[in-house]
Amino acid sequence: MGQKQTLPIDEQGKYTLFEVVNKPGLNVDSLSLRAKSFFKSSGYKTLKLENLQGDSIYSAKGKFMVTKAVSGIGHPSGDVDYKLVLELRNGKYRYKITDFVYTEYERDRYANFVPGTVKTPLETPPGKLNKSEWENTMNSVTIQAKKLAQSLKTFINNPVNTNTKKQADKKTEKVETDKW
Amino acid sequence: MLKKITFMAAMFTGGAFGADAQDSTATSPLQISGSVDTYYKYDFSGTPNIPTSFASDQNSVSLGMIDLALKKTTGKASFVGELSFGPRGQAQSIPNADGVYDETTNSFHIQNLYVNYAFSDKFSMTAGYMGTFIGYEIISPVGNFNYSTSYLFTNGPFQNAGIKGTYAFSSKASLMVGLFNDWNVYHDFNGVSHIGAQLMVAPVEGWTAYFNFLSGRSDGAPGTGTIFDLTTAYQITSGFKLGLNAADYTVSNDNGGYSGVALYPQYAFNSSFSLGLRGEYFKYKDVAGEEQPDFKAITLSGNFKSGGLTFIPEIRFDKSSNDVFASGPSFAGSPNTSKASQFSLAVVYAF
Image 1 (cartoon, rainbow over the protein chains, first blue to last red):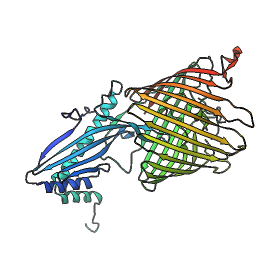
Image 2: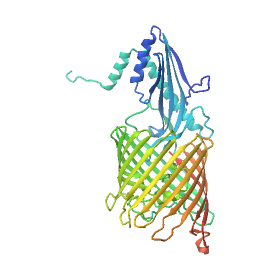
Image 3: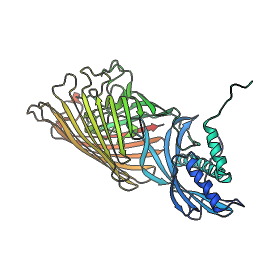
Image 4: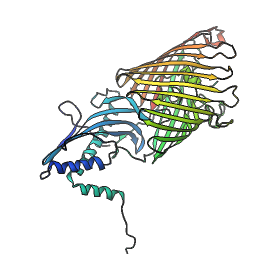
């Protein structure tokens, strides 16, 4: 098994994935069009746009599932709420994924795993007894946050019609059966 | 009267935490979960005394059960199958694989075996054998804070077979209505005989309340049994949680029943240690003018958690209106008394 991954910490002591990306030649309007396409078509169903300031600041909230599994077999062990802030400028943009709050899942009477009632910021020290569990959660969140960031960059770095076409291509692959 | 009386440590490897590429999927991989538990109990009278479910063996390191649950979701359909093996999941629960209570032939116990179909985001139907929707405590030790159980749990239904529809008005309110077999049976010999309903409301974040109703005439019963039940829990602060269970059960034609209330204040000092109290008042209803006893019980439990392991030290004091408890081993000719107390240590591992 590879080394456990962890997120960087910002000036306020909060776990944050942050990056400034230069896109010379693209103005705010073009970037905004691509950002809207990301929020509409990225496939992150829990990601909901909460605030839009002008066409240059996007704020959204979403949820990562954390699964306790071996070889893909296991069960959900919790979820992590996060906030994604995307800011656009002429020729560049920056994103921040932060405000990670963990909700442990509990087993209910029907053998389903459902959110518990305690929400814990990821920055809360886990204590010695639960350090291993916390490290696994952090590893999972880091991987998923990086994947989300990569998806966001793919959308913004490519023209909208390309992104839309990629989505369409994913849905249906056509085959011509009259060829030899 | 229901016979639900009476718990190993565990060695199931935990596991790694997965990270899915997407945040939700219509088809989930097969889920496997479960638990194992074991306990030691000492009743201060020197003999097993308190007549609630599980943790029944005196001065013995005894077994609870191994519980294995499978769940699979494909599109809108899902199933859950959960079996348990061991005293807590066999003879001490009801019924066994043959559908009857019989310690000599008991094999395993079905905790849950049902199929669910979500017609929409708001409406779903479930059919099969399910953990009861009545009450605060459940058979699985993973779902309870205290290891010993309440009188309300022991005397209420454990499971209900049936078919039910649930409609969610919003995330804050839903209604379930269903038709059910007699309590705790796979096969209803007098036809589907019970109707049940549950109204769930979640007025504020962290507070959920369930108003439950179940009524019907069981096979061979002298009257129609009707139970009203309120089960609620409120996470008041990040550390403090308060739970409440109140129930009234009446069997028509003056055939008894019970009523009771239990309060569950719990405080988490950190993610590894919590303390919880259960205070309960329980009264059997008089039958044909014959007075039945009541019970008051206080149970203090600690929960030490490390990963999937929970260690539960617990002390419990019970008092009855009648002399129903033994003051010592029956072979010593000890007189009965109105008080009982016990100490237990339990280990539960959930995976």
